[in-house]
Length: 78
Image 1 (cartoon, one colour):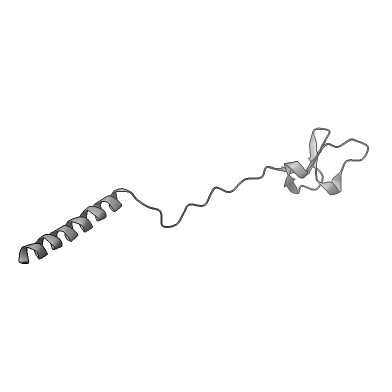
Image 2: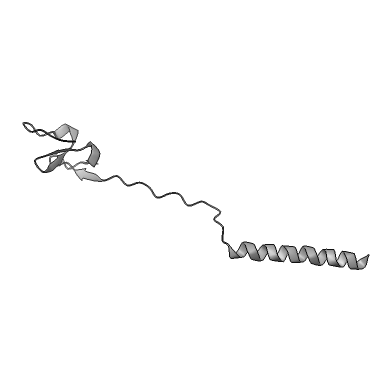
């Protein structure tokens, strides 16, 4: 009976040691890494200097403008 108990204890200790070694070899992240933030390309309004997203800016005569400073007399593209 004593031998059975000794082998059972050795088995449990061996199992715990192997488990610990396997876990230490593969580092796990406790806090997941957030995805990188998406950057929005901005351009500067030629008139007022405010930076607006490129997709919202108006482009005319080779320059960018915000909605409030649309150049008069020209066709502006978005």
